[in-house]
Length: 111
Image 1 (cartoon, rainbow, N blue to C red):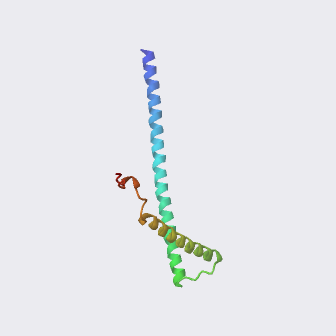
Image 2 (image 1 turned 90 degrees about the horizontal axis):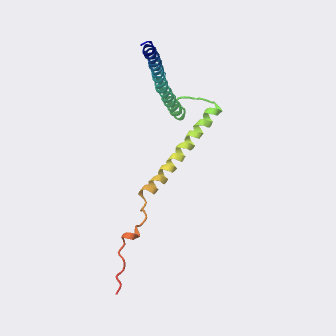
Image 3 (image 1 turned 60 degrees about the vertical axis):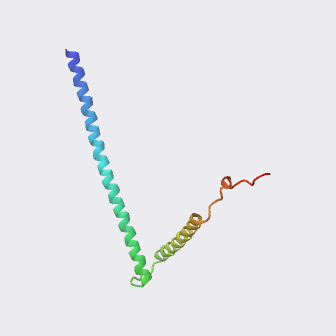
C-alpha cells in the first residue's frame, strides 16, 4: 500500500509541475502577444508621424534643414516611383493576352 501511495504522490508532483509550467508558458505567451501588438502600434505611429512630416515638409509648413531628412525624402520619392513602375509592370502582365492553347485548335481535315 505504501508503494502505491508513494507512486501516486510522485505522479501528483509531476502533474503539478507540468501544470505550473503550462501556466508559466501561457503567461509568457500572453506577454509576448501584448508586446507584439504594442510593437505594431509603435511602428504604425512612427509611420504615420513620418508621413505627416513628409507632407508638412513638401507643403512648406515645416522647414527642416537637415541633410539626412533630405536624403530620406529623396529615398521615399525613389521608392514611390519604383512602386509605380512595378505596379504598371504587374498590370501589363495581368492584363496581357495569355498564351494560346494550341491543343484546343481544330486540326485541319485530311482528305
